[in-house]
Image (cartoon, rainbow, N blue to C red; front, side, top):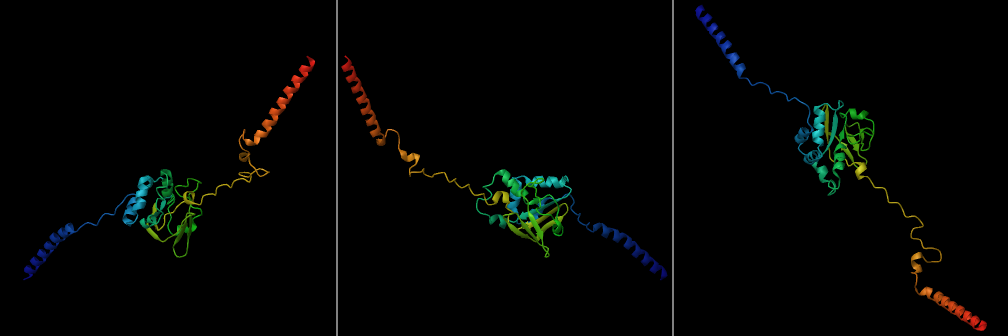
Length: 249
């Protein structure tokens, strides 16, 4: 009886050794976590409502430039993108984008990109005006950004004001925030300076109630009396000279 128990125990141990490794071999391995530098196009595609902004970035080659800078660590401070939704572009006046030159469209896109990685919290210490990719070192195309206690941002381009509270991705070196308005730059869409007013002397008639144009061309009827007087004076002079000559002869 004891031998049977030992045989059963050995058989159970053998089965455990044979079955457990096979089960482990069949268990699926955990999915590998995607690695590599961030890609702004992938973030926007995942968002699902940024087709027009992606199209504008592509036509100006700003998507390629930004992704290249992210891949090559061109800027160690990272980048922040304010991405307008398709509804934001649809709200623009017809022809707004087509009225811009290619370089102005580049500036428009770059005006939505900050050469600095910002979280919602770090915006609280940002110094206004905040430079964009279109600003260069000390140029125009800046934004004024303020953070409030409700973890929201107020962003102003000088033409457009918008509240930001939706982050598509915040993972250094790239942060992407959704905005429901296109950040039209003041430099492109601000009020134009009024035309200079005409000087007081322009179009004012001369004293005497007449202008140079009203004096009439030379040889008009106004000059006829003076011509007749001159003709008579010449005639009298010739007659006088003939009389003197007749007396002398």
